[in-house]
Amino acid sequence: MNILPSPHSEKISLTERKLIKAMARAKVRKETSCFLAEGAKTIAECLLSFPCQLLVMSEEGLCELKHVYSHEGVLPLAEALSNIERRILLPSSYDFSSISQLRSPRPLVALFKLPHVQSEQLEQPQGMTLLLDGVQDPGNVGSIIRTADWFGITSLLISMEGADPFSPKVVQASMGSIAHLALKPLTQEGITAHLHEYKKRGFPIVGTFLEGENIFLPKRPLPTLSTPSLLVLGNEGKGISESVASYCTRRITIPSLSPTCHGESLNVAVATAITLATIANHT
Image 1: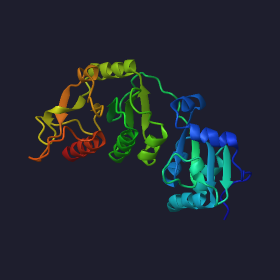
Image 2: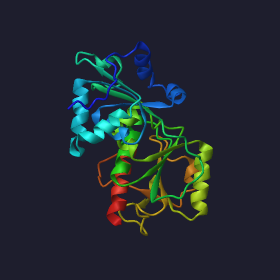
Image 3: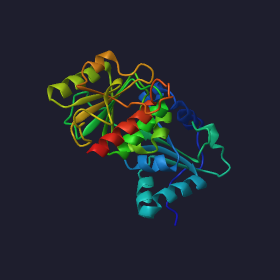
Image 4: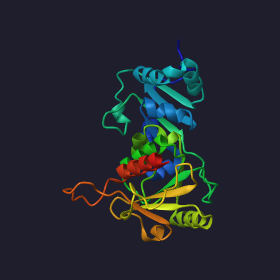
Protein backbone atom coordinates (compact mmCIF):
# COMPACT_ATOMS: atom_id res chain seq x y z
CA MET A 1 0.00 0.00 0.00
CA ASN A 2 1.44 3.34 -1.07
CA ILE A 3 0.98 5.75 1.85
CA LEU A 4 2.87 8.69 0.34
CA PRO A 5 0.23 11.13 -0.92
CA SER A 6 0.43 12.64 -4.37
CA PRO A 7 1.58 14.98 -5.61
CA HIS A 8 5.09 14.73 -4.27
CA SER A 9 8.38 15.78 -5.79
CA GLU A 10 11.38 13.62 -6.66
CA LYS A 11 13.81 16.55 -6.73
CA ILE A 12 15.12 18.90 -4.07
CA SER A 13 16.01 22.41 -5.16
CA LEU A 14 19.24 24.26 -4.41
CA THR A 15 17.23 26.76 -2.35
CA GLU A 16 15.76 23.96 -0.24
CA ARG A 17 19.18 22.39 0.31
CA LYS A 18 20.63 25.71 1.42
CA LEU A 19 17.67 26.36 3.73
CA ILE A 20 18.01 22.98 5.44
CA LYS A 21 21.74 23.51 6.01
CA ALA A 22 21.11 27.05 7.27
CA MET A 23 18.88 25.73 10.10
CA ALA A 24 22.05 25.45 12.20
CA ARG A 25 21.91 29.25 12.57
CA ALA A 26 19.57 30.79 15.14
CA LYS A 27 19.01 33.83 12.94
CA VAL A 28 17.65 31.68 10.11
CA ARG A 29 15.39 29.72 12.45
CA LYS A 30 13.97 32.99 13.75
CA GLU A 31 13.50 34.53 10.29
CA THR A 32 11.79 31.45 8.85
CA SER A 33 9.99 30.37 12.06
CA CYS A 34 11.18 26.83 11.35
CA PHE A 35 13.39 24.21 12.98
CA LEU A 36 15.10 21.08 11.67
CA ALA A 37 14.45 17.50 12.74
CA GLU A 38 16.20 14.35 11.51
CA GLY A 39 15.64 10.63 11.89
CA ALA A 40 12.46 8.57 12.02
CA LYS A 41 11.84 8.67 15.78
CA THR A 42 12.25 12.44 16.15
CA ILE A 43 10.27 13.25 13.01
CA ALA A 44 7.46 10.85 13.92
CA GLU A 45 7.02 12.57 17.29
CA CYS A 46 7.21 16.06 15.79
CA LEU A 47 4.61 15.21 13.14
CA LEU A 48 2.09 14.78 15.96
CA SER A 49 2.78 18.20 17.49
CA PHE A 50 4.14 20.67 14.91
CA PRO A 51 3.04 21.65 11.38
CA CYS A 52 5.53 20.22 8.88
CA GLN A 53 6.63 22.49 6.07
CA LEU A 54 9.02 20.14 4.28
CA LEU A 55 9.81 16.41 4.45
CA VAL A 56 12.76 15.02 2.49
CA MET A 57 13.33 11.25 2.42
CA SER A 58 14.33 8.24 0.42
CA GLU A 59 12.41 4.95 0.22
CA GLU A 60 14.60 3.72 3.09
CA GLY A 61 13.62 6.74 5.17
CA LEU A 62 9.94 6.18 4.43
CA CYS A 63 10.31 2.56 5.58
CA GLU A 64 11.94 3.73 8.82
CA LEU A 65 9.04 6.10 9.40
CA LYS A 66 6.56 3.27 8.72
CA HIS A 67 8.37 1.13 11.27
CA VAL A 68 8.04 3.77 13.98
CA TYR A 69 4.32 4.11 13.25
CA SER A 70 3.78 0.35 12.90
CA HIS A 71 2.28 -0.04 16.37
CA GLU A 72 -0.54 2.32 15.30
CA GLY A 73 -1.03 1.01 11.77
CA VAL A 74 -0.66 2.77 8.42
CA LEU A 75 -3.60 5.20 8.71
CA PRO A 76 -2.10 7.61 11.30
CA LEU A 77 1.09 7.93 9.25
CA ALA A 78 -0.86 8.45 6.04
CA GLU A 79 -2.84 11.22 7.71
CA ALA A 80 0.33 12.82 9.06
CA LEU A 81 1.98 12.73 5.62
CA SER A 82 -1.07 14.24 3.94
CA ASN A 83 -0.80 17.33 6.14
CA ILE A 84 2.78 18.11 5.10
CA GLU A 85 3.14 21.20 2.93
CA ARG A 86 5.84 19.74 0.64
CA ARG A 87 7.05 16.13 0.35
CA ILE A 88 10.17 15.07 -1.54
CA LEU A 89 11.00 11.41 -2.23
CA LEU A 90 14.62 11.10 -3.39
CA PRO A 91 16.35 8.07 -4.91
CA SER A 92 18.12 5.68 -2.52
CA SER A 93 21.44 6.78 -4.01
CA TYR A 94 21.01 10.36 -2.77
CA ASP A 95 23.78 11.54 -0.44
CA PHE A 96 21.94 12.92 2.62
CA SER A 97 25.22 14.16 4.11
CA SER A 98 24.82 17.15 1.76
CA ILE A 99 21.86 18.39 3.82
CA SER A 100 22.21 16.64 7.18
CA GLN A 101 23.57 18.11 10.43
CA LEU A 102 24.38 14.60 11.75
CA ARG A 103 27.70 12.77 11.69
CA SER A 104 25.83 9.66 10.56
CA PRO A 105 23.02 11.03 8.37
CA ARG A 106 19.68 9.26 8.14
CA PRO A 107 17.60 9.38 4.92
CA LEU A 108 14.90 11.46 6.56
CA VAL A 109 14.99 15.25 7.12
CA ALA A 110 12.14 17.63 7.95
CA LEU A 111 11.45 21.29 8.60
CA PHE A 112 8.75 22.06 11.17
CA LYS A 113 7.12 25.34 12.13
CA LEU A 114 8.25 26.73 15.46
CA PRO A 115 5.50 26.82 18.10
CA HIS A 116 3.77 30.12 18.65
CA VAL A 117 5.78 32.41 20.93
CA GLN A 118 4.05 32.41 24.30
CA SER A 119 3.63 35.40 26.55
CA GLU A 120 6.28 35.84 29.21
CA GLN A 121 3.50 36.02 31.78
CA LEU A 122 3.23 33.13 34.24
CA GLU A 123 0.41 30.69 33.58
CA GLN A 124 -0.98 28.42 36.30
CA PRO A 125 1.73 25.72 36.75
CA GLN A 126 0.63 22.11 36.27
CA GLY A 127 3.01 20.34 38.61
CA MET A 128 6.76 20.86 38.77
CA THR A 129 8.39 23.06 36.14
CA LEU A 130 12.10 23.11 35.30
CA LEU A 131 14.06 26.34 34.88
CA LEU A 132 17.32 26.10 32.94
CA ASP A 133 19.41 29.07 34.06
CA GLY A 134 21.99 29.55 31.31
CA VAL A 135 22.60 25.88 30.42
CA GLN A 136 24.84 26.25 27.37
CA ASP A 137 25.53 22.81 25.94
CA PRO A 138 22.89 21.70 23.40
CA GLY A 139 23.45 18.06 24.28
CA ASN A 140 22.74 18.81 27.93
CA VAL A 141 19.58 20.78 27.13
CA GLY A 142 18.31 18.00 24.84
CA SER A 143 19.05 15.33 27.44
CA ILE A 144 17.29 17.36 30.14
CA ILE A 145 14.21 17.71 27.91
CA ARG A 146 14.22 13.95 27.31
CA THR A 147 14.63 13.20 31.02
CA ALA A 148 11.93 15.70 32.01
CA ASP A 149 9.53 14.04 29.58
CA TRP A 150 10.33 10.63 31.12
CA PHE A 151 9.34 11.86 34.57
CA GLY A 152 6.14 13.52 33.40
CA ILE A 153 7.33 17.12 33.50
CA THR A 154 5.27 19.12 31.01
CA SER A 155 6.86 22.58 31.10
CA LEU A 156 10.38 24.01 30.85
CA LEU A 157 11.48 27.62 31.23
CA ILE A 158 14.72 28.20 29.34
CA SER A 159 17.00 31.22 29.62
CA MET A 160 17.74 32.82 26.25
CA GLU A 161 21.34 33.12 27.47
CA GLY A 162 21.61 29.34 27.15
CA ALA A 163 21.26 26.94 24.24
CA ASP A 164 18.33 27.44 21.86
CA PRO A 165 15.88 24.56 22.54
CA PHE A 166 15.09 24.35 18.82
CA SER A 167 18.66 24.14 17.55
CA PRO A 168 19.36 20.92 15.60
CA LYS A 169 21.61 19.47 18.33
CA VAL A 170 19.03 20.03 21.07
CA VAL A 171 16.21 18.60 18.95
CA GLN A 172 18.30 15.53 18.13
CA ALA A 173 19.40 14.96 21.74
CA SER A 174 15.79 15.16 22.93
CA MET A 175 14.88 12.13 20.78
CA GLY A 176 11.41 13.46 20.06
CA SER A 177 10.62 14.58 23.60
CA ILE A 178 10.74 18.18 22.40
CA ALA A 179 7.29 17.51 20.94
CA HIS A 180 5.82 16.59 24.33
CA LEU A 181 6.77 19.58 26.51
CA ALA A 182 5.85 23.24 26.53
CA LEU A 183 9.20 25.00 26.07
CA LYS A 184 9.27 28.66 27.01
CA PRO A 185 12.42 30.64 26.14
CA LEU A 186 12.67 33.69 28.41
CA THR A 187 14.68 36.86 28.59
CA GLN A 188 16.37 37.66 31.90
CA GLU A 189 13.48 40.01 32.66
CA GLY A 190 11.01 37.23 31.94
CA ILE A 191 12.84 34.82 34.23
CA THR A 192 12.86 37.39 37.03
CA ALA A 193 9.13 38.00 36.54
CA HIS A 194 8.39 34.27 36.76
CA LEU A 195 10.53 33.83 39.86
CA HIS A 196 8.84 36.79 41.52
CA GLU A 197 5.40 35.40 40.73
CA TYR A 198 6.28 31.88 41.96
CA LYS A 199 7.52 33.33 45.24
CA LYS A 200 4.51 35.65 45.53
CA ARG A 201 2.13 32.69 45.16
CA GLY A 202 4.05 30.64 47.71
CA PHE A 203 5.21 27.96 45.26
CA PRO A 204 8.48 26.20 46.23
CA ILE A 205 11.57 27.24 44.24
CA VAL A 206 14.21 24.53 44.61
CA GLY A 207 17.74 25.21 43.38
CA THR A 208 20.51 22.69 42.77
CA PHE A 209 23.80 23.85 44.33
CA LEU A 210 27.20 22.49 45.31
CA GLU A 211 26.25 23.14 48.91
CA GLY A 212 22.79 22.60 50.33
CA GLU A 213 20.49 19.99 51.83
CA ASN A 214 21.47 16.41 51.07
CA ILE A 215 18.86 15.43 48.48
CA PHE A 216 18.91 11.84 49.76
CA LEU A 217 18.27 12.97 53.35
CA PRO A 218 16.26 16.17 53.10
CA LYS A 219 15.37 18.05 56.29
CA ARG A 220 11.74 18.05 55.18
CA PRO A 221 9.87 16.52 52.23
CA LEU A 222 10.72 17.93 48.82
CA PRO A 223 7.85 19.08 46.57
CA THR A 224 6.38 16.25 44.54
CA LEU A 225 6.43 16.15 40.75
CA SER A 226 2.71 17.03 40.78
CA THR A 227 3.16 20.03 43.11
CA PRO A 228 3.22 23.48 41.47
CA SER A 229 6.90 24.30 42.00
CA LEU A 230 10.10 25.27 40.23
CA LEU A 231 13.29 23.19 39.99
CA VAL A 232 16.25 25.33 38.94
CA LEU A 233 19.30 23.92 37.10
CA GLY A 234 22.31 26.16 36.58
CA ASN A 235 25.03 26.80 34.02
CA GLU A 236 27.60 24.03 33.53
CA GLY A 237 30.52 26.11 34.82
CA LYS A 238 29.05 28.87 36.96
CA GLY A 239 25.99 27.15 38.38
CA ILE A 240 22.85 29.11 39.23
CA SER A 241 23.30 32.86 38.80
CA GLU A 242 23.16 35.10 41.87
CA SER A 243 20.04 36.88 40.64
CA VAL A 244 18.17 33.56 40.31
CA ALA A 245 19.66 32.05 43.47
CA SER A 246 18.24 34.89 45.55
CA TYR A 247 14.72 33.61 44.77
CA CYS A 248 15.37 29.97 45.72
CA THR A 249 13.42 28.95 48.80
CA ARG A 250 15.43 25.72 49.16
CA ARG A 251 18.93 24.69 48.18
CA ILE A 252 19.68 21.02 47.56
CA THR A 253 22.81 19.14 46.60
CA ILE A 254 23.74 15.66 45.42
CA PRO A 255 26.62 14.60 47.68
CA SER A 256 29.45 12.47 46.36
CA LEU A 257 29.55 9.06 48.04
CA SER A 258 33.09 8.34 46.90
CA PRO A 259 36.06 9.07 49.20
CA THR A 260 38.36 9.28 46.18
CA CYS A 261 36.28 11.39 43.78
CA HIS A 262 37.67 14.91 43.41
CA GLY A 263 35.35 16.14 40.64
CA GLU A 264 33.81 19.54 41.28
CA SER A 265 30.28 18.60 40.27
CA LEU A 266 28.07 16.32 38.22
CA ASN A 267 27.10 16.99 34.62
CA VAL A 268 23.91 19.09 34.72
CA ALA A 269 21.89 16.58 32.68
CA VAL A 270 22.98 13.74 34.98
CA ALA A 271 22.18 15.87 38.04
CA THR A 272 18.71 16.55 36.62
CA ALA A 273 18.03 12.83 36.19
CA ILE A 274 19.21 12.00 39.72
CA THR A 275 17.19 14.86 41.23
CA LEU A 276 13.96 13.95 39.44
CA ALA A 277 14.39 10.25 40.22
CA THR A 278 14.99 11.01 43.89
CA ILE A 279 11.96 13.30 44.08
CA ALA A 280 9.82 10.66 42.36
CA ASN A 281 11.07 8.00 44.78
CA HIS A 282 10.17 10.17 47.79
CA THR A 283 6.65 10.83 46.48
